[in-house]
Image (cartoon, rainbow, N blue to C red; front, side, top):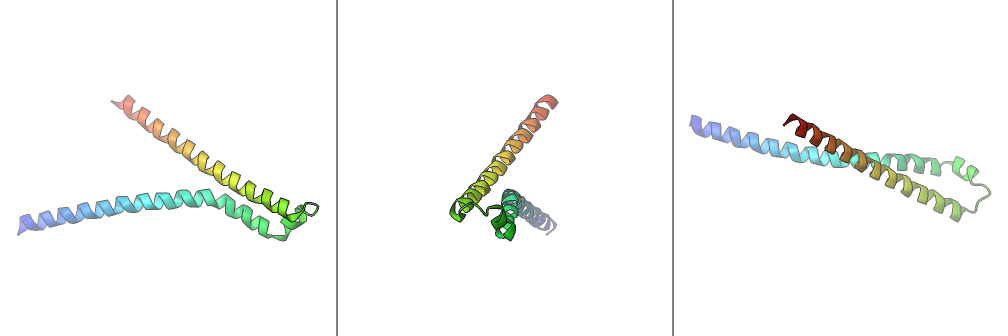
Length: 102
C-alpha cells in the first residue's frame, strides 16, 4: 500500500506541475495582450473625451477619426514589435550565458 500511495502522490504532483506550467503560459499570453492594448485604450479614452473634438476643430471628422484610428493601430504595432524585440534579446542573452557556463 505504501508503494501505491507513493506512486499516486507522484502522479498527482506531476499532474499539478503540468497544470501550473499551462496556467503560466496562459497568464503570460494575457499579460502580453494587456500590455499591447493598454496604450491603445489610453488613447481611445482620450479620443472619446471632448478635448479630442476641440483639438480637431478645423479638421473634418472623417479625416480626424481616420488619423486617430491609424495612430492607434501604429502604436499597437510598435508596442507589439517592441515587446518581440526585447523578448528575443532576453532569450539570446540567456542562451549566451548558458553557453559561457558550459
